[in-house]
Each structure stands twice: as structure tokens, then as C-alpha cells.
Amino acid sequence: MSMRQGRVYFNLLCSPGIRQRSGGRSIPNSMTKAALGALWTWACRTTGYLRIQLDGPITGNNLTLHGNMEFYATRPFHKACLQLTGTLSVVGTVLIQNCSNVNSQESGGGGQARGLQIPPTGNLTFRNCVAKSSGGGFACGDHGVHLTGSLAFHHCEAELQGGGLIVRSGALTQKHGSLKFSHCFCRPRSEKSRPK
Image 1: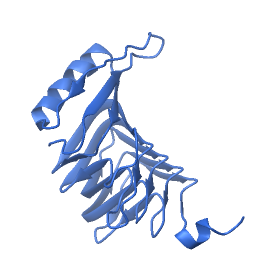
Image 2 (image 1 turned 180 degrees about the horizontal axis):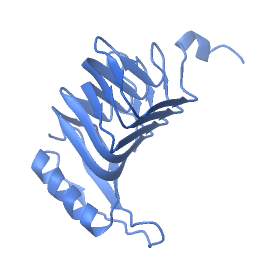
Image 3 (image 1 turned 90 degrees about the vertical axis):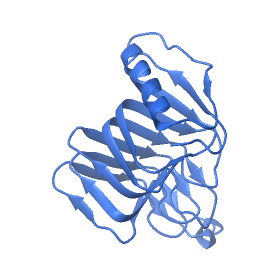
Image 4 (image 1 turned 135 degrees about the vertical axis):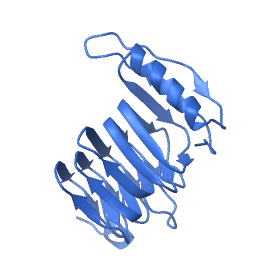
């Protein structure tokens, strides 16, 4: 995985009831998947929760997120916050919020990948994510969504299709777990200009 735009700034949040520690550390633009894994392992052992402030999208192939973490964007991007050419897998509790993709040619506000896997131990939430195109929270391709854990979308929107989620040519398979949408919608540009 590499960071092609900007840096990743992170704050370490301690477990509930413990004072917050703020890290002013930044990670260089080019960073290997192993380096992020080492950072996560260190942060998880130190505090149990990792908060990642994105100044640019995370791009790469396959990505597995372990443990408890939060990603949030500092500004709108021209891609999804997590822009993957492979599959996103979530094992643990992950929150992706305040992501806004302002590129009308790219789908996905919070994330875009060919596939999404959430096993029974996985809990993925998209909150306040927007896409100028489709899939305000997440846009999924031909590998589809395989859900046995929890997947939720809150206050996500898109202008074309799939306010919370769009699954292009793959299937959405839910054997167990939960899939929730709350206050997600599609609103074409023409509706935004209409008075309510």
C-alpha cells in the first residue's frame, strides 16, 4: 500500500476512561503495507484504539484492517478515502467518517474496492460520507460484499446511485450479521437546488 497524496496524521486515543494522547507524528508519502501494520500493532498494544486523520486517500490493492480504528478526512478528495483495486477486509471495529469524493468520475465517498469482506468479528461503519457520483459510503465492484459481521451506513449520500452502498456487478451475500442504513439518500444535483 502506498500513500500517493499527502500524509497520514494520526492521533492515538486511549481506552475509555483514560486521558487522550495526541501524536504529532506523520508518515511519509510512500509507505509499505508492512510499515502501516507495524504502526497498527504498536498502537494497538499501547492504547487499543487508533485514530487516523487522512490528508489524502489511502490507495493500494488488498487491505485488511484489524482491531479498533477510525479514519477521518480533513478535506474533500478526488477519490474515496480508501481507494483499493482489490478487497477490503475488516476484522475488528472500524469507523470511516467525514469522507467526501468530489470527483464525478470516481465512485465511493468512504471507500471503493472490488470486494468487501466482513467476518463475524468485523464491524464496519461509514458515517457522513459523500460521493459526487455513486456509493456515498462505499462502492463495491465485481468481487461483491460478503457479510457475516456488521456493516452500517449513517448520513451518507451520493448524487447518482447508492446513497450508502452500491454493489456494481458482484453480489451482496449476507449469511449472518447485520446491514443497516440510517439517513442515507441519493439526491441528484437538480434536487439540491430545489427549495424544500
